[in-house]
Length: 478
Ligand code: TXE
Figure 1 (spheres, rainbow, N blue to C red):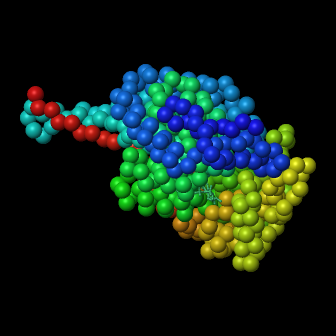
Figure 2 (cartoon, rainbow, N blue to C red):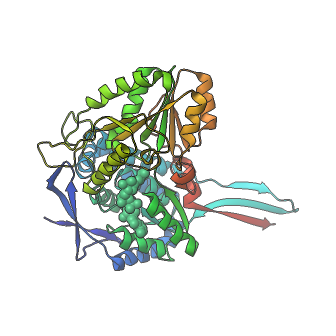
Figure 3 (tube, rainbow, N blue to C red):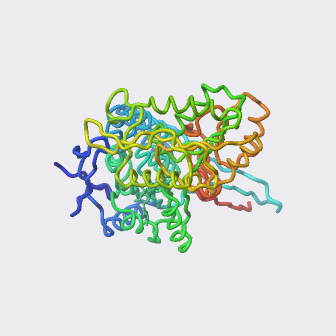
């Protein structure tokens, strides 16, 4: 089997060790072997990005548009193939994975356009004869560190704006899913970007990732991943004054009021809590149900959850793919045990099951009658596990929804305009959804959370400019 290499300074380079990419739907299936970059190669990638920095900073915006547009075009043209690779290495279903690949293409197209729309301001001065110009400039070398749960969309929504605003990139994807990252890197490598502007290093977080955090030539780090690693990114970047941006976990509430359209509320809960095997930072993990509707809602949801088809991500008809790996499966099981020991009622799911191929299969689980202070309601499980919490009325539901260390996404199902309006104002989450699942966002508007979920400026849409540019105020006396 040939080894997929890293991309440094415009060249594909091999290394001594390899990372084996395994299909979680069929652990006998090896997706590929990927060259495992070491510290030296991470430093070479940073050196290449630093060498390309000044010329790319001054690059023509038409050139940036053309490169990003070409990347978007190729991704969209190959979305089925890229989706299949993604489903095979990460375990989300084929339609979910193809949708994610298409999303990556759309993001590159969007930021191709943004490269043409970089704006400044012109202001009068309080001093006579002086003019003020406020402009945005590239930050420099950006380190991009991504998780395994969206192997192509998250890299796209960091790499595309970084390049559009004139930064050079060192991209370190999650070790579990190097296939989509490599395919993206391959497409980027053929887009016409000058050597060194984009570099790919597949490697371990503690080794390659840590080099990106510590090297003074890396001017900014954009990170998505766990709360623990996010803290390490913050500490290392603050210590040397580098700019950083963190997207971390969620414990997203979905409130269902008694006046809601129950079919839609159940559909929102089912989608938000379980699709993509619950491995979404915006997943609805706490279902807060108005007491008078609780039992009716649970009966309807339980029937739907039990009917979900769990199976090989590549099989037609599969609705819930496998858990991504053994470690995540162990974490899910641990939390099921914690929930039971805390007194929560497991009404369905949580079983390890076998399919034709060996994989990390578990049935989606629903706990009912939980309390918001239980660990299963405080900590991110990151699997197909949801809980219900009873709330006496709207005010209590919102108080419970906001009582969490996280604040990424929050949802409400209701037919009351008053409740919807109040919820949009009172929710302490960065993204609020009414009569929609907590997961599932557009690509042209800001994405991000409050409290422990995020740090720094928003990602995506034109708000991405905040992170990938720095502001210059120029005074001119004529
Ligand atoms: O995350 P990590 P992992 C949560 C989820 C999951 C858990 C562990 O609960 O079970 O995190 O997942 C890189 N310096 N989420 O292990 O470790 C790492 O190589 C620099 C929720 O994947 O945070 C990878 O590229 N980089 C979350 C990236 O950081 C380091 C999505 C994320 O890995 C590093 C993912 C270091 N010292 C996980 N250590 C969400 N809510 O979306 C690791 N990395």
